[in-house]
Amino acid sequence: MTMEIFSLLLFFISFFGIITSKSLIKSIIFVMLLQTSVVMFWLKLGIGGNQRPVPPIIYDPAMLEDITYIADPLPQALTLTAIIIGFAVIAIIITMFNSLYREHGTAEWDKLEELC
Image (cartoon, rainbow, N blue to C red; front, side):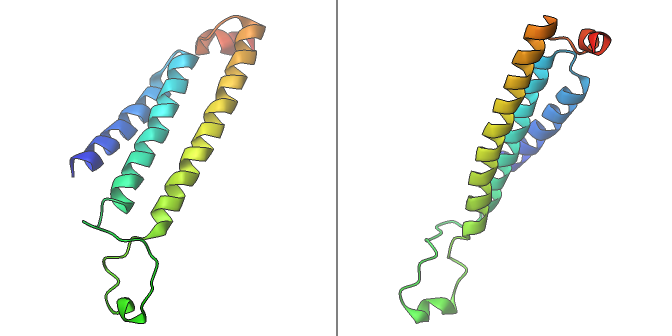
């Protein structure tokens, strides 16, 4: 229960930080924290739900009678996809920041709004 609360708290702190941040670098860090909090929540929700989940490989048809102990592969696949997409988004954001900083020489949102 504490990991769920921590991940939700981190999500809302990161969201607030993205909205109120005056620096582009801080905004990038808050986006990374936001993505991390979502992955943490999915990991706890999907993988930590069962006490001892087993892989969804069924050798015997009699095992289908009680499927509550079988791990659901969907949260694991969604978490892996979220990690990969998050990495790509951060790479694109850092590339865009690099070009903005080289062109305008600042990382402050207010100065960038004046220049653009």
